[in-house]
Length: 219
Ligand SMILES: *Cc1c(COP(=O)(O)O)cnc(C)c1O
Image 1 (cartoon, rainbow, N blue to C red):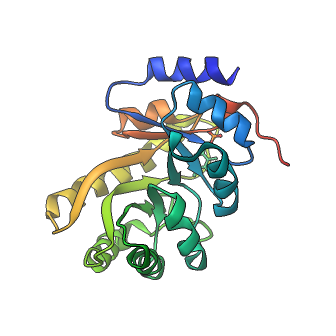
Image 2: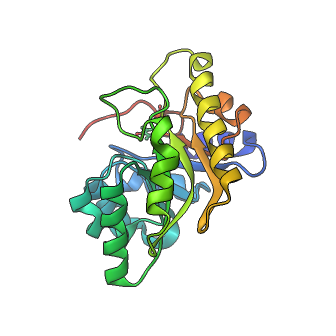
């Protein structure tokens, strides 16, 4: 099942669009199956789940943090992840920077945009994004490589389109600023129900869970 789902999605994705398998609540065995079917990047929402899966799969995949990261988990996160897609504050960026410095590595990051401007949700408000990028781009052990957004949950993917467009516009705006040490390369948008719309709006990383693994189960 997982294998067929992965193959189908990989066949359909346009060139240049990367697939991130959103693995929350899945077992390491399920995740391994999807890696063996050809998924190169695993997205994890929780450091603890990532540690468990990483201990089984290791460097057979690349690991992206796609959930909200608490600053006090940065030390553990920088040991596992190849990219942190969800940086939305100076505090978190500094925690990642310090943790990286201690172990002598650089962390590629994306800035998470709260494109729906929903106060209870993670992500920096669109109007504060440029300021955040400018403020953290001086940190030596992180590398800003793009933007990520969730958008408000909507049943109809067309309802997500304006939020993807807004995030794309910000992506272009920041790119145009040509800030030192900022390279706008990745735009991570779209989930199982919305990834096709996201790709039309410029996404080159899509995060897909349900369509790979089936409905979520909780353990
Ligand atoms: C769960 C999750 C996804 C994937 O959601 P599906 O609807 O299962 O495809 C994508 N991005 C993030 C941040 C998630 O937490």
